[in-house]
Image (cartoon, rainbow over all chains, first blue to last red; front, side, top):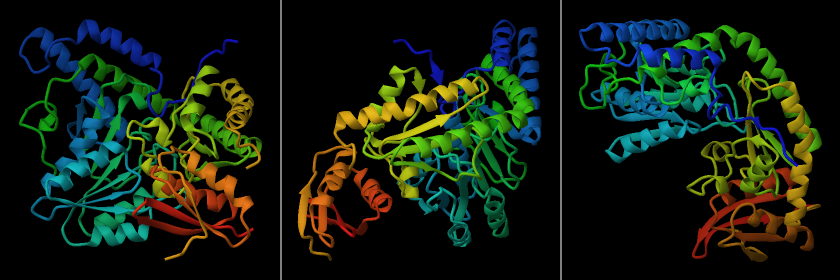
Length: 383
Length: 77
């Protein structure tokens, strides 16, 4: 029996917004030249790049010269962390970060520690929310160069207390970097940050475009070899057609964000309620209220996460998992680990502008049988 | 350190097998029994305590001995 595809992994990559596609195709014709050169084609490319930067800055609520486009969200995150540390190396060499940062941030932290720096990891509670008391203590310690906090968990959706965390940083003059990859284009951004990163394919832009925003006056120094492009913050010529598409789709996504958030929040509420009620021995994780509108995560006791992904895929459902058997390192998600919640049989469902109520209904109708089937195969029914 | 009443060897088993082994054994032992689960899958460190919480069993803690990581669970009901 064939099943029509239902893509529910927008937190990894949202399907491209139609506006992004149109802008990309137009910019392929018009924006291929190097915007740094001094001839007609280059000036046209420069106009497109400037317009993309202005539009992106407007959506983020910053100045255009504070925004740089990077080759990915990952390189933006690496640059944010390493550049923030480098800019304040005379103050100290400690990075404070939450236990639930994206792996891009954690890998940059590992690089920093490997080079002789230190990192202080701040825990979260069972719902995946930052321990603000521990955070305030950590940022007050002598020698803190930078603090990093994800705006909302990319794995479980819990929104972080960024404003309060930023206030604790401001009290002691520590700049705050926020990874806003799951928030930009979906929800209003918190205040008080010094450095922000995002990733275009999370909001319906093309893959291969990241955003790095550094507020004026923040002591941030590029950790990369020198290059004058993009304000000197990230080397290499930008993929201009993709950047143009990213900016156009961000504007479109931001315009619809409030309405989409309302629609998707209701669908996620339905998933949370129905999964908890209709799948036995399941743990729906993350904060039920203070959460992203589009993302929900749950773990099914005694079920192999990889087997569950494959079974769902056979029925046309594309989802993600934090279970160790689905990761290349065979380690469970550090986010689920930090929360102390069940890591096996884990599924992350993330919705987007093309997700319909019917898609969610079909998922909810089929899921209990799929889980029951896997449990029967494994001989774990009634345990 | 707790002295376990019995040991289940789940070394080499991947998630969720160590949890399943603990769940199978628990109803067979008397209430109060401490079962030690030897499990080198890193997910066991998260999933055995989480299972105890979901099932109302007592997680006593983890030890890292000569047999690798081990997790002690007391049957409470």
